[in-house]
Length: 409
Image: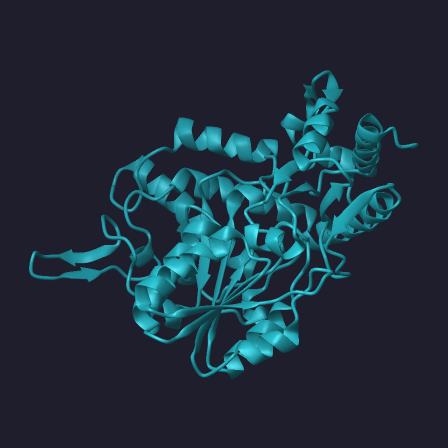
């Protein structure tokens, strides 16, 4: 069982008021708020342990290095990776995808080869592959979805071919909340001789992740969506694959021996961590992971599932609302439109009521085109949200409707 009031007390930002109203923060798909323990960790690192890592023999450098590598081990355990060397710290999910798009493309992709994505992907899981395809003269193929926002698996099977090199799929849609059947996606891709990258930016905070059981080749996520700092993320990759890939950036720490004639590269994972690492925020991310593990990701998933079901039923009761994404296997992310009301107007009115939601295309413009809309309103839940905040959201949507069309409550 989760003590929701105790959890909410861990997040100082939730205590404030917005326009005189208690903050109801429902923009967690964009970024989550940070518990005090993460804030304290960052303060401790900057005030007591700040020194560049891997290079110094002095006390502070050794302390910072150990803290950084401890974070790597914690993330290994969190994802159930086989080896610490398979955990590469990045600036976030976008950086992780771009790393794979460049390095994997250089090693494995040639003219006429194919990369598969889906209609529901975030721009960060589309554009890097387009850039790679343009560079390598490869083709990008797209899995369609149903009206309810689920992948059409029969069409996916048809897209797979001997030319397929890699499948890049979101684990959870940032717009629809759909949880994709990634184990089946991975199995089918492997049967076709392809590798798979899973974008876990919207899944690691909601459901347990086991990269070995999932059997993915690459997995990426961002720390700031996992109650951790911004500017830090993780790229998991199978060791045997990472060993084959060339680095995508050159600089300090990723080298073994530098000569003008030729340079040799460092061992994993350092080959992919050029320059001064973001060691402070890596330790902050470890603190966030430890916070989540103390609560229990299974407990979080169960609580959020119940809240998701309640929110879905309450939203369905609202006159004039159009909900996008009706998959049964989903998380508490809800995108919607109120009939005849621009999403920005809805968002601005809710804001004045202290309710923070996201408006626009949510970096999924192809998905907007699929549904024939210019944008949506999105409310996305996290472990500190409550039924009372769902009620505030629904009351705010009804109030918006009355303001525009004098709808009855």
